[in-house]
Image 1: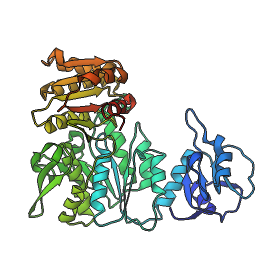
Image 2: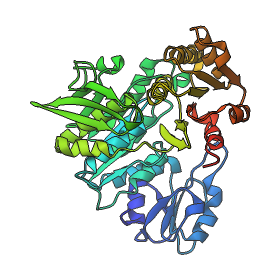
Image 3: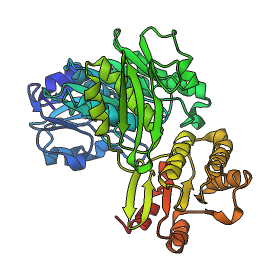
Image 4: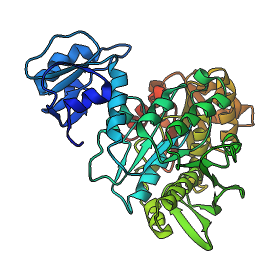
Length: 460
């Protein structure tokens, strides 16, 4: 982060200086009092079960030079205390002010599935030409995105920012901070449909990203998603579509899956044909690569640079990670789950088994499905049966619906097992797993299915 002063903070947040000097320099912004170092600005946030204001004294003692507050506290000797209307809003306002100091291309990414993988692939491509700041981990919300923005410094030449949401208005607030030059929407699924009610409402919420898009900005949309392709010729921005359908501006063809070795496809750009290899299993990664190609070309990279960038891709933690334990392969895809990502993971399980290994799908509940929950889980079971997975092991109440969907689609009743919790699954797997097995573990984040991964990997 570049140095800012308390005067800058006052300007950005419309705050009031309670104590300290306006020319005091701040070197970093933190919302965690446990991680304060000398020179920080501490922004205390109020949550449902905590209030960061309780830790203001500890933050100042640890070396914070300045603190924001929306509660009445007295002046603090030699420290900047700034009163604001709301510290959460002030965090966003300050990040938006700080972002505007940088005249570099920003790429904003949202969507129901594939945001993080697309972000990593786009960043990998752009890093062939630029020094790139990207969202790390799950820092894609109204706390994480501003903190990501504060990591910008004069060395950065581009930024790739992920935007998550669970309801209306969240992406609107995030895009107002990030002000992207390129906006990508990966797809419109049913994640968070319990709160939003319909896929049309999810589309509406994701479209908020365009509110912050620059007038000359580019919109990059998945053309194989019917709701997104329905926007063709309706937006007031330059728009390109990517996908497998012939209607797409960036179309992948001759797709070849090679299991654990990855996926390859061909694409025509201009008058030239190119072969692209993604070093990760799953056709879903073709879509991520196509989005990265669209962004790379928009920002002046050559196709050879783009292909090299895609070849550097590695999935993030708990996202389709393949772990080898002796002769057993474990697919750790426990970060989250939706119907689309469940089907993609089951397809990868089948692809990397090479047809001669036992395939075991350990599947947990998909949360926040609302009234869609039954059909969503039932259809995942049907899909697993259609892929001829050898064994289905489920955990959770809705996991039983997955098993039901498989069984009512002709799946062998002797090969389906349902359990109430992860501990029961772990006890079962202890004697069930055999040499040569390929095991997928996947469920929503709230199911904590990494507990099963730890059991399978010996705590690794």
